Length: 331
Image (cartoon, rainbow, N blue to C red; front, side):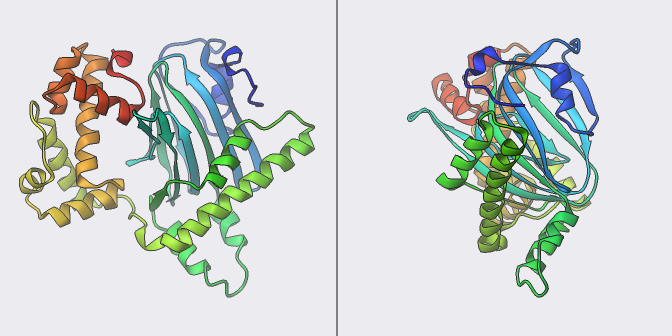
């Protein structure tokens, strides 16, 4: 689907959104809508570049509090999110989102490469008014391995990464990669052949950056899905944080409550979520406050208390930095 210049005059229906799944059946979890109802303002698109290589791109605003899920099989994913924030998970792995700078009113994009070796549930949840601008590449293991020549020194590193379930690496993309993603999103209307060439050239450019960054930084790759012992520890951590309100939880306090050293806790959270301890605490507490605003109709002062902020103004600033919209817009 072509992304028009005037996004405000283009709408995507429920049926069109489901069709973009491209052979991945979508479970529509809410809200209750007919197939012809408009669900996005803007546009989305999908293109199969090669057998085992496809691209999905979007520049659209959610018109409803939308939640969908689908099953996705083994693959290597490369994503570049330019603007906006939704809750998107592959199994337990939360896909990183851009961050918003309140002072400059700018988004800092994020690019991620991750591996998936088995079937997982993909879940996307967004609030009404959320605008998301992103490009996602999906790569089969067969396609990836077919690109390496005999004796290629990079093959072992890529193979080890691709065969570790939910291994991932994220970074701030280069201006060149951001430009390629922007061009994919705003691809000009041409003949089918020219359009495919235009998109394909830019897809390969994004792949080149992703694999170059991986080669240079593979020692920073976060591990895969947590084992049963780690899941028990993570549950205890989330239970403890869920009981806290009215004060800010420090990294030291959380490590003591979890019964582990600060370094061990940091390694666990980095391995599982790719987040530092302080970043994990802030996101967890702010997400609790967001749920309370959306579900329980609490006031902003009450939501600030839940998140551990004594000042509603400071809470609102942190909330908008985290989610890209003010607390008032989710009430």
